[in-house]
Length: 194
Image (tube, rainbow, N blue to C red):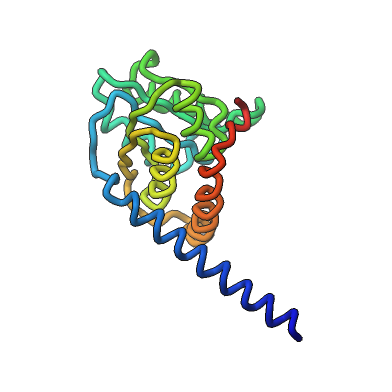
């Protein structure tokens, strides 16, 4: 009986800590979210693709990048291309080119397999320390928090604000990911493909 009681208290403590971390992450970054912003570099975080097309969520991110593209800035597409059967970055690049972004203004990061890895690689592999990050608003809080922790000056510009299919699952996943990355940025490990 005592074990159950201790486990219950432990669960309550973990829940309270995770609520505090989520609240802190949102509160410390929300002022860095703008509706538009000019920058030399625009980082578009990857999302799933369907065949050779971006998913709706990814398309919305790319469309926002196209809006911010001036011809005098670069768009970095960071996503998963760990094997030949799945290639987010080439699909992202092709979509941008089809929509009048010059190919020489697109930088590919094929090893952005997580938000942390994308931003770590931006700073440590591409030597970029100032950018606009484009993703959905719920994801921007964590993205900006990671950027600040890695000494990247970042402003977040949200893609169109709609509810996507499966959003409740994404919200829970993001809640947990904020807790994970809160501790991860304290350690600052290298990206998986360093």
